[in-house]
Image (cartoon, rainbow, N blue to C red; front, side, top):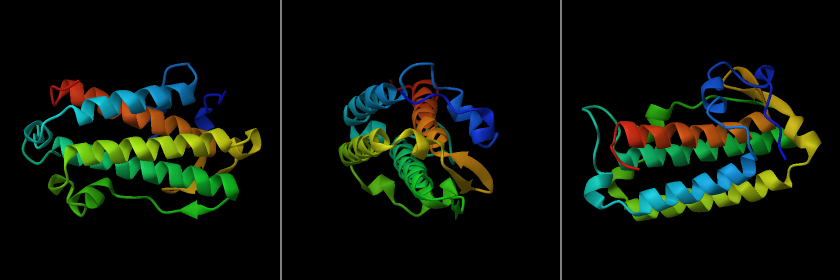
Length: 171
């Protein structure tokens, strides 16, 4: 079981994501939330998926696309840091979403991509040994351990699931 990272293993910004993860088996949580999110996203109509709760806010499709981008980025960082101490740049989520054209994709396709990506990441995470989980690197000008990114994957999804319920009215 992967232990919760200590506060000195991630940036203060990441505390918001890690703090959302309950004290349970994080791999089981990643699996359960993957299925819950897939079921939610794949059940939406294209009209529902095109909804934005306010002007200049992301549509559901763009928010799901952002989750995919972030899943990919956090997992990449975990993989790189598990192999060697290195420094990686940050990423600007708004630039990524603005240049991805998620609204021209089907919500079913986005749901399948998220699920497939998460499943792949779970295999990678299960392959990390204790030493790899504690390896660290720099991302966005802050120090992180691999296990911090595992928890950030879970917390980021929980964060957006709550936004879907509270602001988009879907759950």
